[in-house]
Length: 206
Image (cartoon, rainbow, N blue to C red; front, side, top):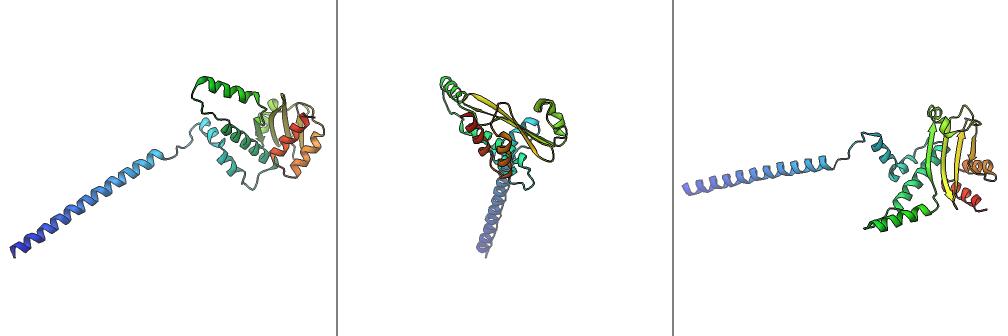
């Protein structure tokens, strides 16, 4: 009987030790998981630079383009930002030496640029940027302003679109034949900004 009692006590002791080891493992695993989550958690944007970095990412822009209440000019603006974001990603270089990196930069600067210097303002923010973006002939009651630059064959076109609540007026820093009619047609047909850029570049090649 004593032998059986000793065996029972031994089993209980081993079972208690095994349970204690399992509990310790659970605690260690939970601690590691909590530490991993806290170290890899996305940091909330705290500065204007952080916000600009996030909003310039192509994934964020594509989500914005899915919004149902976008105005035509706002949609073009987001598409312009997407062109810029995709262009930056495609032009990234992994050169290991300075000479190769400088050569890559020279190649990029020598190319025609599809889009740069993109600006959009709506509502009260139009007045804040009026002196910079608009000339004296622009309507005083502008509700939306969108502008961008594109370079083709060495010529830089600065395109400005002004919505006064009734219609959109288009202007270019360099002359483009039938600019107002063609841009209005593209806007009415909800054409992509790529179609707009192609129209401008084709005009530059004439």
